[in-house]
Length: 401
View 1: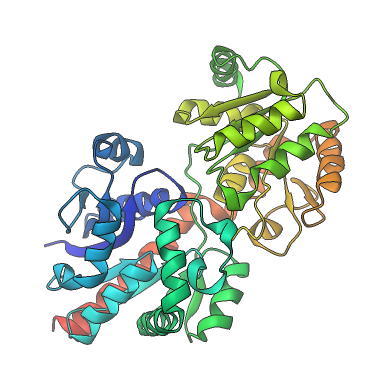
View 2: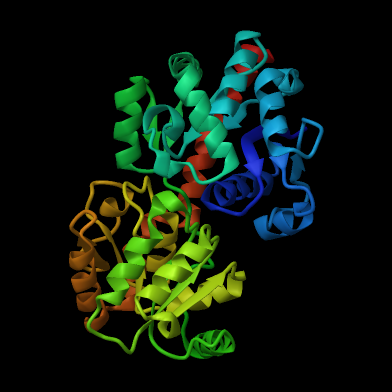
């Protein structure tokens, strides 16, 4: 009988980096034919379940469940926090991807029902990096408010939950330092987010087909690409302003992914007089994204203190040079002189000047792609499965022997 592994996270309402990592982990476990992965979310967006499941590209037999009833995101979140007993009795270890999930896993462990490991993308921002700029939606407002009134108690709970984990896995050296500074956990290891094998340099007919895909989206000139969650605290306006200052006015800027506060960006683009040079695509298909990554002259990451920056690494895997801030965060560990440039932290003029240098340089696309080989899915899969096997053995020894 296959061993059950429980992957737990807060919400499934859009497809971002964490959700893609969760799908990768579930598929990797299923492919071994030794594990039975089950994914739990405290809330799954109603009306979007089938689309999201399709976008996750889960292997046959991988189930997604919402143990709480109801369709309200905040109420379901509260139920998960107040009534974690819905998870008690689950066989097998838990892989936690959030503060809430880790807290629940600790309660379960204290009842003698199972162990857990944590995959930490970053410490909970609402407890340790409290800024109003981070608040860009209702769930974050609720978390921010909770952090304001209940900060000492929540930080105590968070640290207890982190210390109760067998191992904490983080996504970069930068995040490892932050986690060790806050928690002083004795077993923190780096496990990079994986790059799917689909992200690679295209050639020949594939490259021609991608060019046609872009032309169908009316992208017919060389362009700078910004992709991902364009939310308030990632400062997409910095990238737009840096693009506006570039010397080469024949280039266009393509912005794809989730675009929050779209009207503000449209107003900024209009005020700068570059409306005819900016494409706001919003959500793009996988084929469109691969075409964008492969044909961009440069990928731009304007988010400050990005813990890892999966989209940057995906672009590099496709042979496109990248630019980000030299602020000691995740992209600083990835971008080198051979695959892009780092700009002085939050200096838009310096970023613009370096953008000009990148688009003028003739990079070796294959060399750029090879520079991120250590993030390829095959290598990360082996590391992840080793971690799960260790947790499963611990579970069998302590809780099921």
